[in-house]
Amino acid sequence: MIVKDIVGIEKKNSLIYYREEFSGIAIYHILGKVQKGNIEFLVEADPMGNKNIILNLIDKPDYPLLPIRRDLKKIIQHLIDTSSLPL
Image (tube, rainbow, N blue to C red):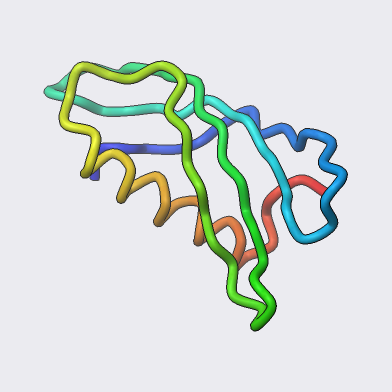
């Protein structure tokens, strides 16, 4: 796993009730080095109750982005399932 954790998650004010905006710092473990990068993500509920995650990497690491995005979405989904995101 490339992404170790997401720290400093803060909720932004959103005027749309079914859409929650967050920002945080992702900690990556790439090629034996620890790197940090700012991220933003949205958790949007569709009419059927499913949660969609939209991810934006602000500080892009020098590594292929597809495995990083996949790992980040898994971690965010785990945070949603365990209700660990800030209110």
